[in-house]
Image (cartoon, rainbow, N blue to C red):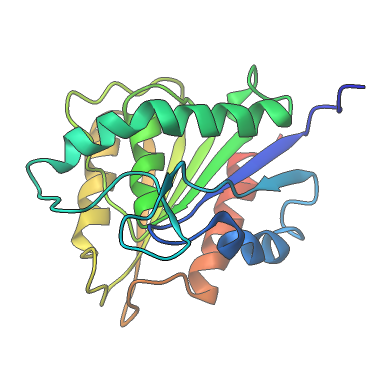
Length: 206
């Protein structure tokens, strides 16, 4: 028997060296705001090359500003396989506007690439502590709404990366906004989580 399609789906995309399960506490926090949504948190397709049992979406070994875009492009097929399988399980491949991608750090980078490249015209993206590092030209499809949340004291990915990301997406005609949290480092705070929940609930309403 085929499962009934979900009304909407939130897909959490973890940071490098982590696992999908590490973001699932967000699902519990967001459920009251999104009572009809399903939640998923797949593991990245590759073992973390820094050791341990974590996963990654692409390698950052010897990564530079110059070669990062090529790393992202090379990671697309494996990411697409993971995301396609996840969305298909919930019966929403034909209704991508009912899907939200919520990524942290490297998960945010790969989520932003998914919409900037036009491959995944989902309804919404929340990018925590991320950046748009994809190669140009950007060719978005559909009307994904984007919220970039970033700690103002992030020592790993500077907050200016989120403001630059939003500026680039707005220039493409997308509804994108940023929220910088003063004094916050490379993490998702309770305030940041609440901002994301409200944003996704509004984006997927209807």
